[in-house]
Image (cartoon, rainbow, N blue to C red; front, side, top):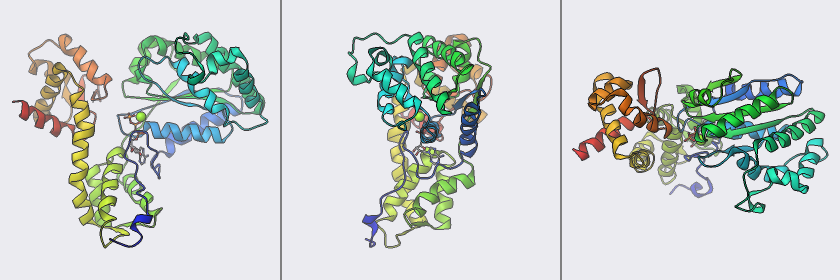
Length: 390
Ligand SMILES: Nc1ncnc2c1ncn2[C@@H]1O[C@H](COP(=O)(O)OP(=O)(O)OP(=O)(O)O)[C@@H](O)[C@H]1O
Ligand SMILES: [Mg+2]
């Protein structure tokens, strides 16, 4: 055991929504949010920003960083994560209370939030989950719009603004989404109010179905990291603990994980665990990476691949098998028409299955009529499961 190993905490963050020590490769996305802030503070209006990307690319940690930066600038900027069955207005109410205590003292905005919380009327919308009886009807959108308008009005007097930072937007019902789009468009035109959100790649088409007027949404892709960014994502957290990666170890971990942020964190985490028990620590060597790879892969199989596959219905699995089979011939992107043919079905008969898999974030449509798996390496996993089933 190398001396001092126990004193160094593992700095990698392989978990959904876990903030990385180094948020790399997102300066453009952060700059966009920053420009929304300066537009609104100067009295101009700004487009809503919606970050779209596959599972595990880092949408949540980006949104949390944006919400934090806005809050540090004095804004009222609650981060909230949506899920099916949770009305967006109720979700906002549940976080607003906690957030009120984080506002700068003395500002108009802070006073306004305080007033709302003290008065029953405000509490109706801004009440914490704990204070609100379970059978209380969800506050209506008009109430919510009024409260947000009054917060934004107060923020304007401070030269600040209000932002809703909303994750998993594709998870709400069409009706909720339609209501929120209207609310946003109404507020944004007259007040320093920003709407910043994230969702899976099908979010733009889902929003288009939910509301007719959505031209002022700006969709910003959030993708895998480039090679040099991936290397920085691996190197920097270790550097913060005075631990260094050997060049070949770094190359190896980046090639195993690709530019996929979740895998970069996981492979690095496991390599660190191995390295911390070796005599070579505080260096991480290629031998450590080699030993850590199968450990990381087992976790991916049991966790991320397995959870997705096991959560698929029998019909959906058959669809995944057909996709995997076609990929042997067509490569990573397959035509949905060909998947239907492989299944001996009409395209229209299998499209509900395809859509359900898209909603679950297992597959996506990188281009019209084309389909791909959404997690790197999932093809090999599905092929393995198909072989087991055969
Ligand atoms: N820019 C980044 N640099 C380094 N690591 C990152 C970056 N972005 C995300 N990560 C890491 O990637 C993983 C996934 O991040 P996150 O949960 O934000 O993804 P997501 O896009 O919200 O995924 P999901 O769609 O499943 O919610 C986490 O382990 C996080 O620490
Ligand atoms: Mg997320």
